[in-house]
Image (cartoon, rainbow, N blue to C red; front, side, top):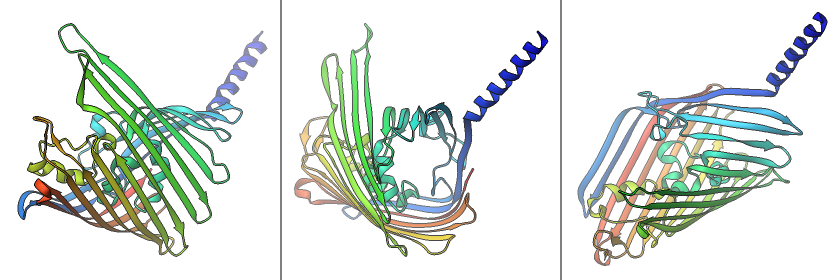
Length: 396
């Protein structure tokens, strides 16, 4: 009997050890800090109406500061259960980012297989991020140099309630699909009956073979809200965006090209850095820009080169155009005519790798944004934005 008890204990210990070997959990993160200068100013018809200048310590320029947990558990037959929980923070004061969410950067659980792909559920990037972000020499990093400053959230945005599928590579080809279906209703006998629907679908495609890498993504989003059965006009939009691009590695230098458009509204209401001009110019304060008559175009030309095994440089020019064919003031439904905003950003960065986990960087970026508005587009608004800084990034 004692032998049976001993054997049972040994088998239990072996089973526990085997399970522990099949399950892995990793603590990881990024710490990025530096020093820099940011200067922005807006003039309307030659008169300064707004300015902002910051000199001092910077946080999360080359990469957003974060810490996270990710893990996998082998389920057999080449399939594994996976999870990832990621939180963002400000290195300078230790506060959390993403609206104070505990895991605002990412919170997902799913299944993955080398043969059929990966399915994840939770808060995560849209599918465009998986196929487009890697085409920019700066990715979604380096603050003003990132192409999100003109393409905004059309190239990848964190969303709640996302179900996403990413395929494995088939001879260099891959694809992905993301879906959001969020219907809510809030009713009490003493308040309004509010129904809100947010529905979105995204598809992405990629191809990689030798020096060529291509990517494309399309997103469609439908937002609608009714209050006591009446549609809220400020929350009733059907918008779409598409982005495509590619890179070609000439070995000495890599070429980056990206182009995209958004129609009848912009994803998440984000106009990129041009949104600062629209927000801080008093003449635009009453306007509802993110409506059915808006259209954006964005483009990027970039170059990157690995000078040595430890040193590389990156350059990009990105441009954008926002057109609103008939801008309306919501308070009185008055049509104030068309508005056009043109954006131009030039950026240059140098990166030196001190080790596989630690790098030093320097970044310089200059942006110019011009708007035409008013009767017959006779008024002008102009914003200049300059950013210069150096920093250190360590990944753990």
